[in-house]
Structures are given as structure tokens and as C-alpha cells.
Picture 1: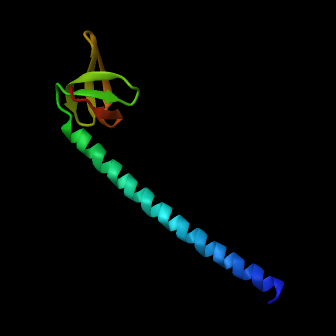
Picture 2 (picture 1 turned 180 degrees about the horizontal axis):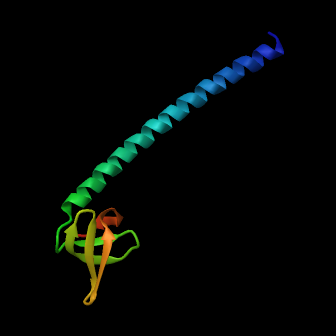
Picture 3 (picture 1 turned 30 degrees about the vertical axis):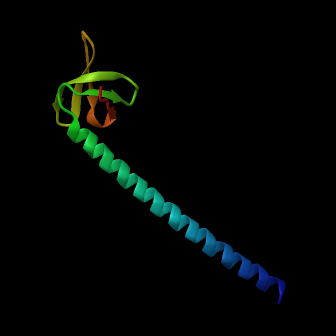
Length: 94
């Protein structure tokens, strides 16, 4: 075999293996994203007044009201903030 043939065969083999790895990574990533999207949809649907939540900044509060894509959250006795529904990362159960 010539040297250029060995290089060509090695390059093709490497390209095929790399392609398979990229396909596997893409499939696993898409599956994970779908799972996360379903989880977020469930979180958004479960939000109602009185629910204790934690949102992206790490703040914990109680939902006062919900309107469209925003939620009013009471953090302290006199502090109510309005945040986007999708900034809520978790619903806390006590």
C-alpha cells in the first residue's frame, strides 16, 4: 500500500467515527432538552396563589397572583416582586 492510501483510509475512518459520536451527542442532547421542556411546562402549570417557589436568582417566596406570563411573588411581609413565570426554577413543598 502506498503512504497516501493509508492516510486516506485513516482519514475516512476518523471521519466516520467522529460523525457517529456527533450523532449520538445530538440525540442525547435533544432528549435531555425535551425532558427539561416538559418539566418546565409542568412547573408553570402548577403555579397558583399560595404556592411556595424558588426562582432563578435563588430567592424564595410565595405566589400572590399569576397573570399571563408573569407572577407576583411575596418575598417578605411588605415586598412583592413581579417576575417572569419561566424564571421560576422550582416549586417548594413544605
